[in-house]
Length: 206
Image (cartoon, rainbow, N blue to C red; front, side, top):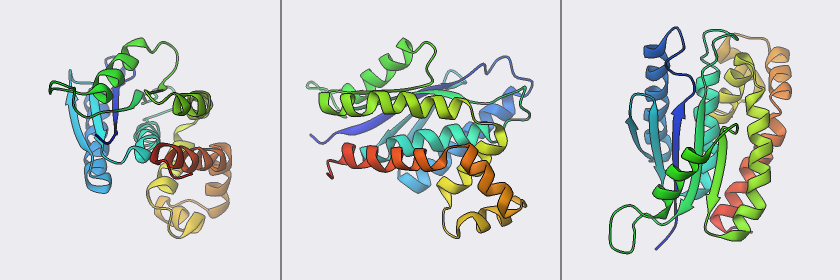
């Protein structure tokens, strides 16, 4: 059976923010966008938890960064940061006797095991874990350092890259140099390479 990717996550400090309803509403808007753009199946639970399943595993990290950029970029202020922890797992969709397969169980277990990290990867294919575990930790470190404005610009870059920096500047009502500098601070070139290479590895296109 072909592998799928499952992302299990939860909102960080969702009960401590000043606008918990707006925080949850932003997540639901992002999940709806994933259903449209990626054909993802999404579900929310316990108010601040969510799960995303993808039949094209190579899109998993792009989806994870899209969710996190969309949340961080919508943060009301630097002091009230919106973000999520996300555990990504690659595996089977169904178990040998039916029910949820390893992609679902390992994604959930990965979230339970997360401590300080906010992005984690698991695969039963050892070469993928070897190739992507450390790269994912570095990507996570970059995302955790984003300001809301950097995340907002990277979200636009990721979702609507057509037209380049000038188009992003027009959509956000910013100057082109401001957008370019924000993308550079967001380390967009490194993250774009990470997404490109992880897609190729997970799809076996190498």
